[in-house]
Image 1 (cartoon, rainbow, N blue to C red):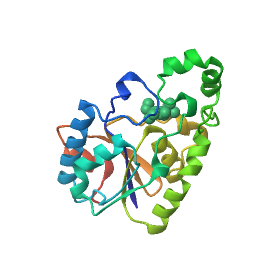
Image 2: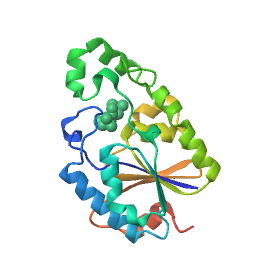
Image 3: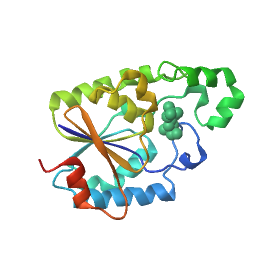
Length: 207
Ligand code: F6P
């Protein structure tokens, strides 16, 4: 079973380091969505045709660009980003300035830290469990379009990454995370130039 994870395209909040919210895609994010559509078209021999995604605007705007390439698109709110409670729509600097003790607690134990009025990574890993179980039951390849913390929570279920490392995994924007048979095989940057040989060599995707 092949799982491909991607975060939405860059949002208007990403360059400003704003936490959560429901922003639109930025111009860079719109460009990414269009590049992603071209990528899926060119790589249709191995790319999953079933998409599962969060309901947030930045995700829906990303999915809109390639929806004609999918056989099905399921929106699942359990894939919405980590709920940062009272810290939603703050920048990380504002979070630090307004709630220095909370900020320090999160720094010390990001896995268990629960935002006031919001969620922890442990909560999120539990929230996505039903989505994961359904994917595993069906056994079909899927393309999941979601968010940074949600990608990490999904990696916790689909791979053997250590739980304490989960909140720190690098999931860069505009990159596809490829997971096959419980292993993270690597990531592919979606850009203007698609190097087929590199993709085949790195991931042996035709095997
Ligand atoms: O900054 C983008 C974002 O998706 C936020 O909305 C979310 O709270 C954050 O990433 C999760 O990452 P971290 O847990 O590292 O702050």
